[in-house]
Image (cartoon, rainbow, N blue to C red; front, side):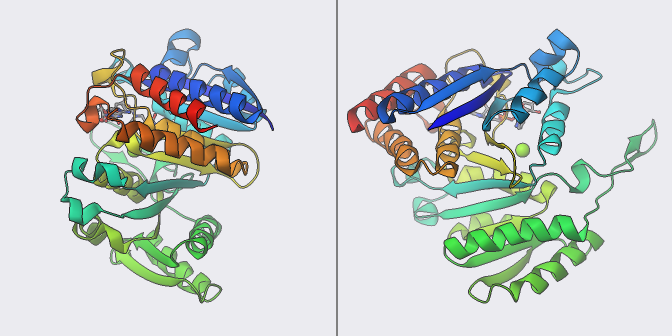
Length: 349
Ligand code: NAI
Ligand code: MG
């Protein structure tokens, strides 16, 4: 298969984990005879330094002309006080590609149950997916402003925006354990009342899917108390952002969790859920598992199922062979872990 992949390494640990991802993709291309081409574009803080904007036109055009976009991470203290923040490029990229569905699988590896801050019997066999709405809600809504004495953000959702993300959640639940948990704050927020009403309306199209509604504060508690109860969680942008970082800790580290963001048409975007980790940037310490699993999600979306499975297996085998980065209590470097995964891939095929 021929695939044109736009790579956006970004800032902090971004270039280190992107290098990992490209090495693994090159090995997959070799083992399975695919033709993957990679282009690298400026994005985030580095793009601000060189071009004055975090999402240069050339970068956006190249993403639109690619089959998939692979993003590492953006941001860092250097750009926090600037006129434009690197993260604003990320929001514009998501909006420009219309990536309304952010899919975040949370799977606990059996090998890592002892690395979770929660008790191992609590987290064993946890497997659920957070479906986060990504192009609406308070991150995008108008009006927003601030002055010396007041600041305003607005949380607003349309029926159409809610319907398409909730439908995505139902369809996904149908292919999994058949349970959909809708997270909202319907006891307070008007947008949540509409959200809940629409979930109930759509549920009649999915008699095989069991639906539950949980308020976001209770959901935060349930994720810790009994994470195995979840199958598919569907929620709005801000709640999904917060709950998925919380969920990542069930797996042991923020460096584990991948994501895919989709529009249904046009290129999808694949990225780890973590940020640019400025505290460990440039030190060859970053855990590349989140970006490698994002790569596996990408390949699966192109129906390259064996290829995706072989990456997942190579990661598990590397862990079993004692390769762990510092965030998981080990002492492998990013480069050592990546080399081991590539070796496992060569061995498998
Ligand atoms: P962060 O996710 O970058 O880091 C939080 C903690 O997790 C740090 O201690 C970091 O060392 C650790 N960590 C994260 N990824 C890791 C990995 N792969 N391996 C090992 N350890 C890892 O979040 P933080 O510190 O709040 O934000 C740092 C910068 O990243 C900020 O500028 C923020 O705005 C930006 N950010 C960017 C995102 C993106 O590009 N999608 C998402 C979240 C934050
Ligand atoms: Mg976040």
